[in-house]
Image 1 (tube, one colour):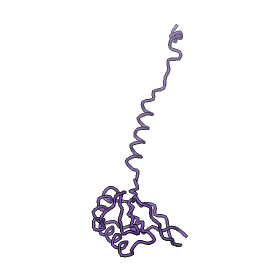
Image 2 (cartoon, one colour):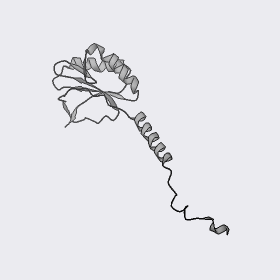
Image 3 (tube, helix red, strand yellow):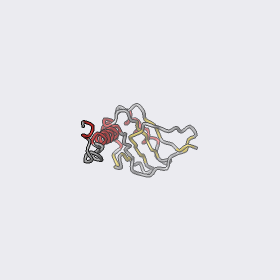
Image 4 (cartoon, one colour):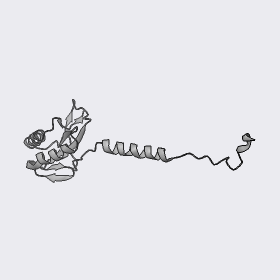
Length: 135
């Protein structure tokens, strides 16, 4: 009578253990949150110049805006042009793989744009680009 050990009470009590699945989902969520690259927006609207040779920059995570009124914006804050280097150093330390994109208004002064570009390079960023709208 060893075969009759299975009783009617044992039928239907089998359940799937969801704990490993939930653990795996949380690990994936943490992985993607840690490896995400967040873009630091400039914070103002810019009328970009047109260029036929414009290319898409994939690793841009620091945006610096130069307006037509000689204002410099980083991370939605107006900053002094002389303090650009310090801001870029701080943001670049958060993501060393990233690049800087300068969003210069079509009517902005070239001298100020060059000064901002120079400050970004002095901060240690090798990939610095000036944004343009493709023709």
